Image (cartoon, rainbow, N blue to C red):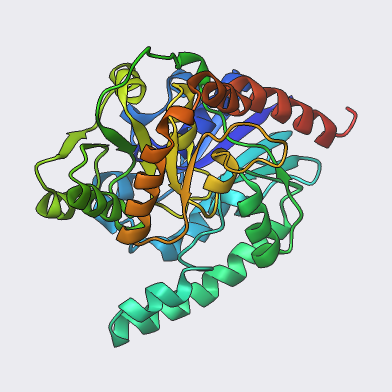
Length: 369
């Protein structure tokens, strides 16, 4: 069976790239297709294989700042990728679900989320723009919504990374989907007999992650907060950070394990589709204080109907006051959290579970050959 794995970008190391890497482990003979990618960021499993970039690959690789302006070319770039000789195509979207595949091929799309910019965040983005850029954005959004809806109808089977995303996929694309949580390597997790006196967050540093709420809350409470990650919002955070806030930048995985294991609790303020970092923290037995919305409702266990122990605390609003309240509630009940129970919960999201479920799903999707 000839297999193609199609992933839009290899321009950073994020959760979506981790999923693509696991697909590569599952199919060691698969070829890789992408819109654009930095060869140094390709997962190790792809570096000795056939890798095909779209016609905009070199343009975006050498002039990365054009990425946000090149979106009118994306549909053509995606459909120009020749995957006609493959029996199984696994794509990760958005936006590469618009591939042109052969009639007998099976195309499975692993959907991380419908593009927020064109769908649920459309009004928010439109309101921020001046008049002329707004007109361009509105026209582009209309085109992209039509194209993405049409593209998703051509996919044979849809897999999503959470029930939260499943509801969005049905709302915007009218497609039923199967939930298979993304892979987290929980085997690296270990429990310390004690912990240090700092809260932790690990994330790309962008405005949408709402790390500013965590900084402001810890400033007011005088709590130590360690921030791991880089991004375009970093300087803004540093400008508001008090003496108890520490920035570590990019931390290699081998060193990050110790940072996870030593934290008092993990803080998470984003409206996230899944949120792999919350699971990674729990793999080390650390509780999570999270915004109680979106993917966090599935990764952090609070008030379980079966009576299983909580693995964290929710806050109900993305406000400083709500974050402060949740930290104080956590500290009042801190001794009640059981690290090995938290770690056991994290293991239900392990990479081995993902691989087993995906193999079963693909097997059921393939025709008898």
